[in-house]
Length: 498
Image 1 (cartoon, helix red, strand yellow):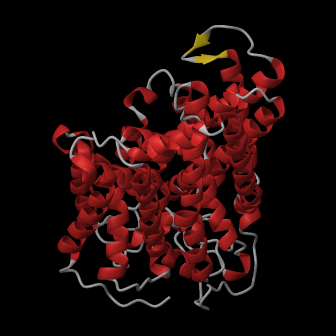
Image 2 (cartoon, rainbow, N blue to C red):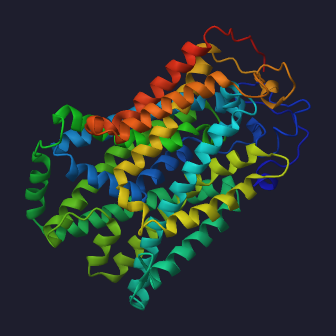
Image 3 (cartoon, rainbow, N blue to C red):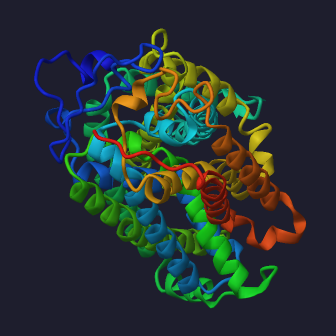
């Protein structure tokens, strides 16, 4: 990645606002080309690329299944679920605008930005946590993408041999290996190629989803409208009542995006301006979520009419549609969408995070290979073991771990340091440097993170708070930021110049 994305240059390294991003004698233990600031001249992403990051995240098979589950599992009126999903999109948009701003201004990834609050070495802990989380997401999304590939192979060549190993058939294993290899090949081409890949994958999935909706509507006829009325009626049987159910919908959707929100700077650093980032977030989150949720609702209702059950995996729906061309196109498109977001959300964060552990020996490319290896094992065990804990609990737990990190980074940047960043100090391990703290570790921030994480993870699994478990991401982020502010407010943040 570094050879293609950060070629040597003698030009001044400037940010979008003209800030000098040229590093002067960075410490080798904190710097390599993947972690260096991206100057304005090498930023190729605009609003459309950011829009497609979110669009592909939403459109993945995992995202579809989660959205469909929200409509049928919480006993709410369908319009209330709709509103909750859109509200979650607005919340995530606001959170990303906040955390992405310094990365746009200085061109630095999440792992480097976290040094300001955690310490130049202390950042290794939270970035490693983020990397481990991404590895689990990588495995899960790889499995979901392989179900689309398996559908494609089955449609073209038949179901193959019977029997399973760890819950996967022979076709399932072949599909899983194909997906893993394709992802590695795409990742090796770098962030620019990934952006191009996403730019056509996102719109293509919407085209196929609209085609699926029209096909199901044509087959279901007037019964589809009746089924939609049933879905929108709601049953109101969620523990804790309507307010708790609505909060769970909002919180679960926020938690779904939590992994990307925390390290959003890894993507924002490649955008040309803050305006482009904000526009991309607006169209890619609340607007795209509204369209996707509507399509999901209609397709799920159509499956209920035609097959007697509300199918929450589009691969299962396509498999029952007696149209070989629709099956092939839909399977290929959902495979592409899921692979796309897996590359952006689950390869890049651990790649930079692992590079941050030892920049002199680990590049982003090496970090990606490690991620792929660990994630491969996770995905292989998905059917047999991991999925047994439930999708909602899986999403909420990972989000709960990450939430305090977001709160700490934002509180430190906006409340304690008043948006001042000393760029040179982020790459300095000299004792007495601004972000050196205690041997490179900010023990106060780490204490805030640990305390807030214990609370947020406990809240997910504590029976007394079960009805509010989906909302703990917000609680964890607020608590992490508040604890960090209270603990650190006695330490005056020194002014800094870029």
